[in-house]
Amino acid sequence: MQTNSLPDELLSLRNQIDTLDDELILILAKRFEVTARVGKLKAEKDLDSVDETREKQKLIDLRARAEEKALNPEFVLSLFKMIFAEVVENHRAYL
Image 1 (spheres, rainbow, N blue to C red):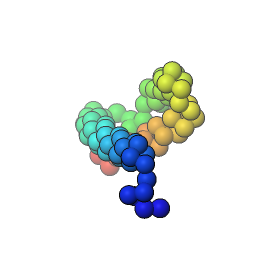
Image 2 (cartoon, helix red, strand yellow):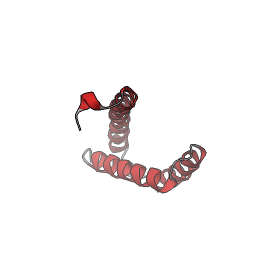
Image 3 (cartoon, helix red, strand yellow):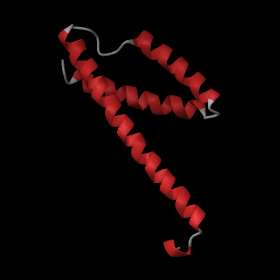
Image 4 (cartoon, helix red, strand yellow):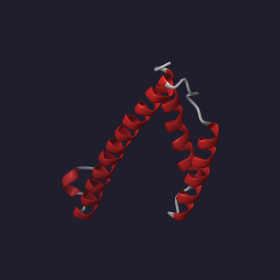
């Protein structure tokens, strides 16, 4: 299907999605910048890369937030578990 035959409303919505996707990438980049600082600090202070208590509480909080926003909590938890795993990998690079 050619773009010029699509309704303007659909094109506008797609543009909004593209903008939101860009914002998500920027937010992820900022999050990983902060977690890199955490990883360096943990390495300097000889702390574990994983704080299981914080991670469990964070997942509980994220589930609640997802439910408040009518999002699929299992999807949100899966997404954040992937983010957490990447953070831990990044932290281990500083050890």
